[in-house]
Image (cartoon, rainbow, N blue to C red; front, side):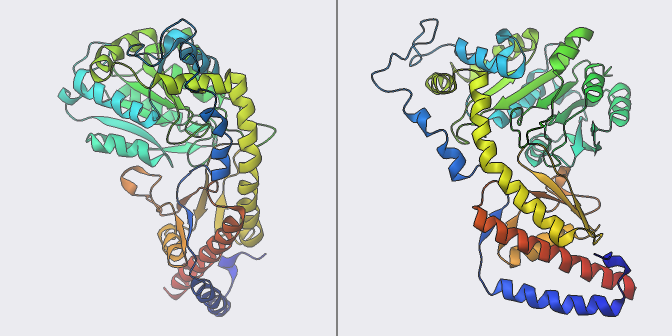
Length: 430
């Protein structure tokens, strides 16, 4: 297919007439399709329904150590849940804290603790240190950015590369500016690009020399076992690398079963050095006497082990991978060779990035909405909702049915073409 930018104004005008007619026909269908968030489909949630039967009123609800899961206590989580997540993340059980259903909740609390009480390094609480900054790899996860924005922390864009964040920029800012207190990371199958950090990038993170002693890496390993292909990415264990350099206090690791079992009733976990965990427990013990231990026990008995969780995720892969392929193949068929869009093709995770012509992302999202397809808002993958180039759109193909997804993908491609033709006509007229 010819590059659309090489087409004459007259040909573009003819294309626009055809695209407008197709668009009006789609609008007339009155569709209501949603690709706005990375939610598991109903079929994926059905995979875990056996969890509802693995504990009954006749079961002895005791942990392996004999504690009654129905009662108070075990702030850090039941021992077998700590072991399960330690095996999953490559940590020691003594470095694991098991919480409620939301890892985002644990991240928010971790920032809030640092704001109010500081960190185990004994520095002043963050909210007494004046202006604060966080580094934000972009495109990235909108809810991460919302947390730091809520606390009034300035966010600095860090461009993503094929190997992870631009580490030259990260190292320079972290080592030179004591007001830089942290960085958000989704190190495996990043949201939304689907990039996995290279071994060199992980080692450079572990070797950071922060100007601030209380600098922290927020390592959100949300997609640690969420593979989509038979050649999955591998991620170097950052805690192991930090321990080699004595920097293990610098990293907080987060994960959950939100996209493994039930999104609204999973189990979340924090991994950290024993020193960091002891500090966190001082304040967590004031918030709660313990999280839902029966749910923790339910997850342990259903999955059995980290290997059991990985086997379960192979069932998810069988449902998700065709959805990704459907949309990616549609993009290639309809947009390939036109020079008006590019996209990532990840080996796992829940999203991929669609990059349209600069200045067109908002227009594409708006056109899709008016045609009955809801996408993630343009700019959502950037701090403050501002994509400087207005080019990135996060695509979430997991939730719709295959039939709805095919319709949504067709409409998305139509809207990308229409927005591109409009922009090119404007440029030729200027």
